[in-house]
Length: 152
Image (tube, rainbow, N blue to C red; front, side, top):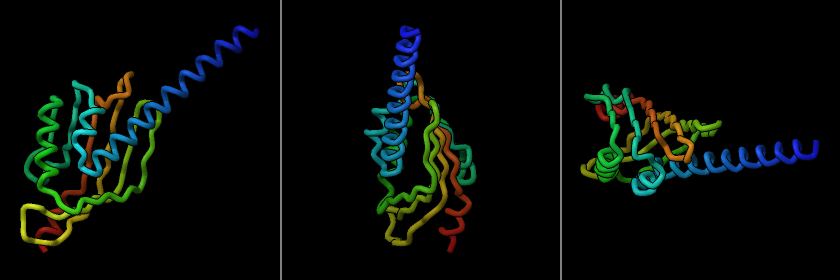
């Protein structure tokens, strides 16, 4: 009986440490993503990342990446065009190997003389692998609101 309790304690301890690592990596990843820190994101991405934002179709085409280097290069260019980036979290949680973040992103176009700020809601869902690296990132954004604000 003592051995069974001991083994159970080891399994629970390992599971809790694994969950703590998952939660930390999800938190670190979302913090990097929401602040435009692409290098910190890269450190947490799996080489076999699948990044998909099908809601971007409203802007012309969906964003789909299955190559880490291409994703990092694209995000670097996107964030270069953004100034005064801010993020306000509504909900963020990790459960098992899934992380969810929802909130409001705000920024202005750094490549324009226009000082107006665009704000819209975003939901991100990430999946981590057994090494706690992000293997999937699904993005859902209210780009219709972006278009509405830009046409004012």
